[in-house]
Length: 399
Image (cartoon, rainbow, N blue to C red; front, top):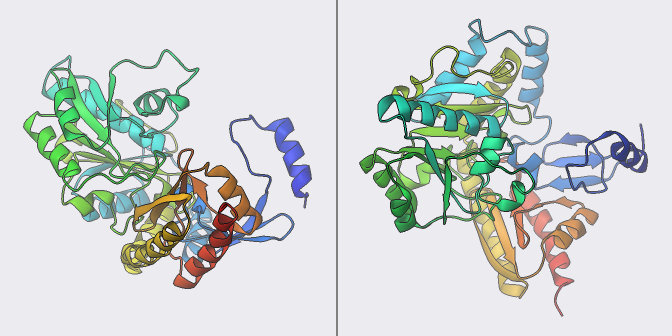
């Protein structure tokens, strides 16, 4: 096996330079831990950026992969695929009874939602209803449409001109949403909790207010649940915290437990705006990924991992609040379930690097926010271990 230094050199030679990679080459994983090429172990509170909801190499996922790999990997969506149908049924039954379009990522799911909203609005309301209202500091993906929808200019810089038909308003500002809707608006696209934007939770009335406003003004409400979905926040879907239902929901990350899959779930009346030929994905929902995703979703439901995320997340949040009370460099601890953050008064990246040195993987969410999105199977003992690493790292910044 190559050493980390050898792999870093080869990466510089052969890979496009699109990631600010840490100087670590991860080689294997198990549960909530990963090992690098030299055998050093890390406690993983990044989980592939909120992807590995069952941890690494969960035995049921491994078994599903082995069995389906020996059965059928891929066929075209020109034919019916049983695992795809079964996964769609569970997603529909567990959400708001909609229909599902499968793709390969969160960006593709959001792209599908944008296209569906425009097609539905033109057919149902008016040919000039095409505008999507998005929020500042949001993140919806890296395709041209989703990077345009994303409310952080740093992601679209250099790719101009961006696509027309997108408008950005402040997050958690209901009056701004009301003012922004006009005769061209077809949909609002919002994350229930902003992830990349800093794990920002809206006020209790914000999402119910958006739901009411969209219904009154005949505008579709699209919720980007790519990060908040699949039990991450302590409910299977983030919108459940606020007692509302969207018209369209997008999923990815935790849905595949590590395999690439995205999904757009839409109310049947909206979904029916798509007809054969209006949208497609070659690999979307193939037998292999949908079998694995169905295994992941079934385990989330059977093991009540949403409830576990709520309970262990509350414990982790309390431990983070204790750190916030002790260290002036911590401005606030916040989050829901196992989607948590520490907002700092100093740059976050050096903290992430020091934790990496000591065997803990965590993320940033903006320049001054630490993000914690461990696997949903994380234990209280592992939370204590993570805090035991983070605590002395933060102490280094006390003057």
